[in-house]
Image (cartoon, rainbow, N blue to C red; front, top):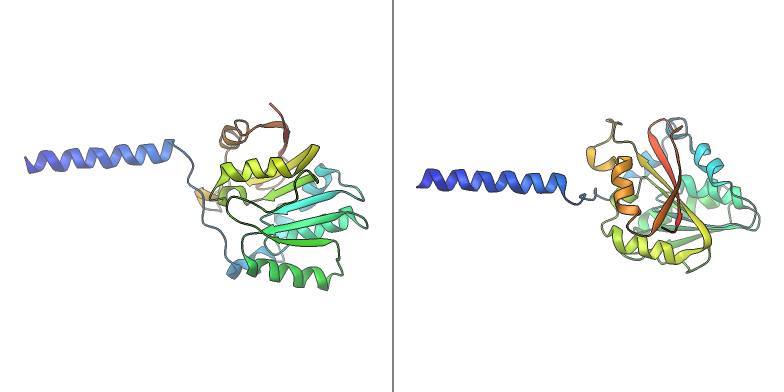
Length: 216
């Protein structure tokens, strides 16, 4: 009898593991301020080629943009220069420590058009209906509450506003599996949330860039 119970328990564990693998994606851990140095590593620009993202967004003077999960502001600062002198970049993060580093680096570069925003897990605290673009770079897989966050991002966009989403490819094995997303995974979560895929950019060395707008 005991042997039968053990076998049934093992089967239950196997079924639970299968459900976890095939069910909803489990978010990755959020990078802490201790990882600030890694976000600003000297090799990052060459590894990721952020200029591809900036070019795909086709930003212009006066645009209002948000960098969600901005971290230390590696992309924020590039966005700020792209929309200057009249544009604004809202730099969102859930960690005050990251925003402090971001403010220091922006000040050192003489950038005055960045607005730091401390957000929450379900609300990025962005102004509603004001954004031309929202950028998320290697952060969506860390969102602990992705569904309400996607709804909040929709509310922050102007009519015709767009989202640029950058995620590690599923084949890029130098990062842990929880930090990678296939195109199928991305679309399975973004399309039901009310977004329409406009294009996919494959030229980045280790990431994939998706351009979305609100719509079916």
